[in-house]
Image (cartoon, rainbow, N blue to C red):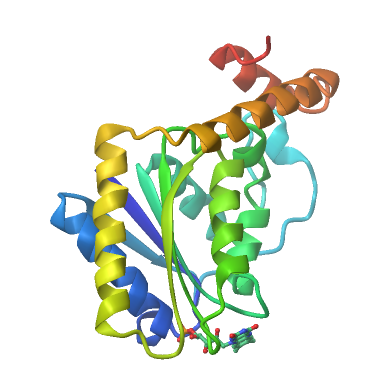
Length: 219
Ligand SMILES: Cc1cc2nc3c(=O)[nH]c(=O)nc-3n(C[C@H](O)[C@H](O)[C@H](O)COP(=O)(O)O)c2cc1C
């Protein structure tokens, strides 16, 4: 069972958020998961240019930086832990830049069958907009959310225990392929929506049309 931890604090492992995310990772590892970490700090992730290339042909982004490799790891993982500080009630900019590069993952729900969890920290401890956004981003890509942990500037033993328990839940969801009916309902409705859009734009989004056809998702 492979889990990818994507950390977007510029402070990397010295950051508060990573200590929380590492708690999730330890919980998952205790259940047999192998966790690989990608710190976005120091990585080159250009802004999406809206060129449409990822919807065409082989669905490959033409920008030559670190994003395509990380995106391939997202596709190859069974679960993803998102770790970000709350920056003005959103994820930190490198994580948003990465997400903007994943339009194809959203159109084609390429994280289907996977599970996500998130760790968010802030000065105020008021992180619901950020953790809700991360769960919704995962669902946009077809992944169900196992949950979130959140803390203020100083995570205490109780929240670290909560993080460990979330890691165990994430690993359990992956093992047993838990179905969260409301999340699946939302994702199936969005897939039907995108099937219609992709059919209308078949000439421009030929790669995505072929992907949907191959999955039997066009009807
Ligand atoms: C640019 C910036 C924006 C921030 N915005 C918020 C915010 O909107 N609300 C909040 O409570 N804390 C905010 N903070 C505080 C960070 O979320 C907080 O210090 C966080 O724990 C840092 O995590 P890290 O140690 O993993 O980098 C902000 C900090 C920075 C540098």
